[in-house]
Structure formats: structure tokens, C-alpha cells
Image (tube, rainbow, N blue to C red; front, side, top):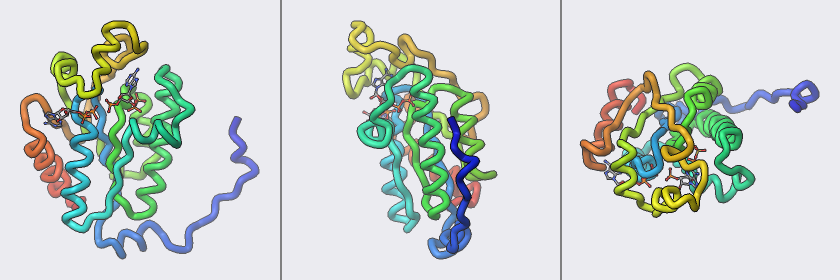
Length: 199
Ligand SMILES: Nc1ncnc2c1ncn2[C@@H]1O[C@H](COP(=O)(O)OS(=O)(=O)O)[C@@H](OP(=O)(O)O)[C@H]1O
Ligand SMILES: Nc1ncnc2c1ncn2[C@@H]1O[C@H](COP(=O)(O)OP(=O)(O)O)[C@@H](O)[C@H]1O
């Protein structure tokens, strides 16, 4: 139940624009979505290094890490994934308000939830990047051995196995991590950001 009716919004004395001016760059969210093992965490961290070298303040929010703390009360039911993504949308908004570039690495399997996150952010602040990789290739990679467990029935509601992944219909950008190397995918996203004058 929302308690918002008894709460008053406080305007910040230092605005988002002030912070962006001080940082000398825009702030926005790069929302990576894709199957487990598609390359979200790897790409987010490569992008973070590249942005850091360019003096762009940035921060990675990663599913595995956030689920150890802020979202440790959530599991993998559709409902819990929805709440997971809602909270990440809200946290991302705070980071963007602070003048930071946010790199999110969550499966975020449902179109509706990703669109809700987009709505939380302002116009031009949400860049959905589909980290595209066929399920078969993700299963071969299986960096954490989770697909193997899911196939044996040891993990339930695993994305791509017995829980759905809804591909983005019109993402801002797509990286094909089966066809291109980590370095190439990173360069492609950086080129996208440059083409939009975001960095
Ligand atoms: N049932 C099930 N389905 C999918 N993934 C599972 C599951 N159980 C554990 N894991 C591990 O949790 C990581 C996904 O967490 P996310 O917060 O990104 O998921 S979601 O966006 O809420 O769907 C995911 O990390 P990535 O492999 O980095 O995607 C897995 O390591
Ligand atoms: N082009 C690529 N981009 C990202 N990862 C890749 C690529 N090619 C191969 N990989 C490998 O795929 C795996 C992806 O794992 P990870 O980044 O943890 O994925 P996710 O966060 O989506 O679960 C890593 O072992 C990584 O080295």
C-alpha cells in the first residue's frame, strides 16, 4: 500500500543539471538485457573501464551483486523479478540524478518491466541495449554452471529453460555477442554512445 499521500517531495538545492555541468558529461542509463551468460556483466565491466578512462563517472549495477544486498529478499518468480527491476529502475534514477552514468546488467526478461523502468527515467535517459546471444550458445558458455543445474531440475524457473525471456522489440541498440568479440561489442556500444553525443 502506497503511503505517498503523507510524504512531501523535497527539491534538491544542487540540481541534476548542476551535477552534469560539474562532471562535464551527460548522465543516463545503459540498460543491458539478455539471457544468463549472454555477456551482460562482462560488457558492463568493459564499458565501465572504457568510460572511466574517458573521465566519465559511472557505476555498474549487476544482478548477482544487487541480489546479495538491496534485493536479497527477492527470488525468481515473475512477481519478484518485476519488483527487482522496479527497484533497479528507481535506484538508476537516483544515480542519473547524481550525474552518474549507470550500467545495469540484469536479465530483465519482461518487456513490460523494462518499459516501466524506461518510464521512471526521463526522456533520453534510458538506453536499452539487447545483449543478444542464442540460448544454445549461453548453455555452452554456462559460466556459472547454472544451465546444467536447471536442465537437471535443480534450479526452477530458470530463464530460457522454464521461465520466459521476452526479446526487446525495438531496443536502442543490439550487440551480438556470438558473432563479435568482447572488445568489438564494447567498441560498438561506445560508438553508439558517441553517435548520440552522450559521451
Ligand atoms: N532461476 C533463475 N533464473 C535466472 N537467473 C538465475 C536464476 N537463479 C539464479 N540466477 C542467477 O541470478 C542472476 C539473474 O539475476 P537478475 O536480477 O539479473 O534476474 S532478473 O532480471 O530479475 O530476471 C543470473 O545472473 P546472470 O547469469 O549474470 O544473468 C544467475 O546467475
Ligand atoms: N562478445 C562477448 N561479450 C561478452 N561476453 C562474451 C563475449 N564473447 C564471449 N563471452 C563470454 O561469455 C560469458 C558471459 O558471462 P557473463 O558476462 O557473466 O554473462 P551474463 O552477465 O549475461 O550472465 C563470459 O564467460 C564471457 O567471457
